Amino acid sequence: MERLDKRLVGTGNWSRKEAKDLAKSGRVTVNGQTVRQSDVKVEKTDLIAVDGNPIEAAGPVYLMLHKPAGLVSATEDAREKTVLSLLPERYQKLGLFPAGRLDKDTEGLLLMTNDGALAHRLLAPKSHVDKVYYVEVDGVLNQEDCAAVESGMTLEDGYTCLPGHLEVQGNGHSGYITLHEGKYHQIKRMMAARGKPVVYLKRLKFGPLELDTQLGKGGWRALTEEEISALFRQ
Ligand code: URA
Image (cartoon, rainbow, N blue to C red; front, side, top):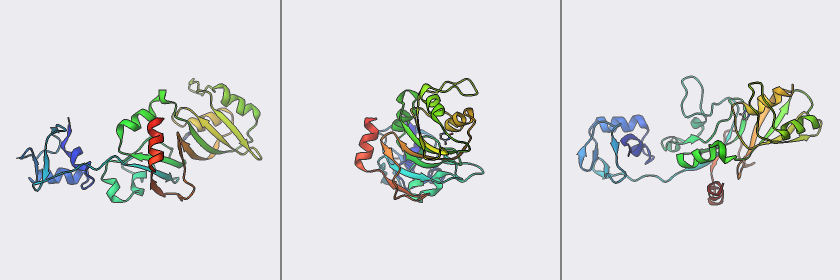
């Protein structure tokens, strides 16, 4: 069973608000009966029609987004601009959401999808999906920092991270970090625990997905068939 408005929104033709108004105005039928409440539950097998025309569900959508700094990883927010606002309206109506969060000031790869089952699986702690970040710090990263990340650091709240990997770049002000989990502000808290606060953070990889270098900040594209298959094999 799922809500009538969800079925209507899932076609990609209407927003949730529009779906509600459609029903209210008596244009929606379920198995031939007019239904004015958009929050009623319907069965998968129920025949939904708008103005007498049966609706068809749009398939699941998988997009890669290059998140710029300054936007929140959410679908709606009372004060802040969200990553969803970067997508054209036809996608906004498909119920897309970011699979995972990047902080407001973090840039980089975000998977946007309306496939709740896949997102749930990828984000489950036991999935251990690898994430690779480029990080710049105030300080100089050294071999002790690498060893600390490799051994599983304990953060200020007592949480012990899974062992990760840090590869220091050039003069030590930057590096690449690989994590197999995704705790709140994890890299910032790890670097803070090393006394080297993060000044810039960008996600380059999420599981099998790599940020497309052709995508400028705020750019997006549909995933290829191969990328989608790789996500399902994850
Ligand atoms: N770690 C952080 O601290 N922030 C992010 O956005 C992602 C990982």
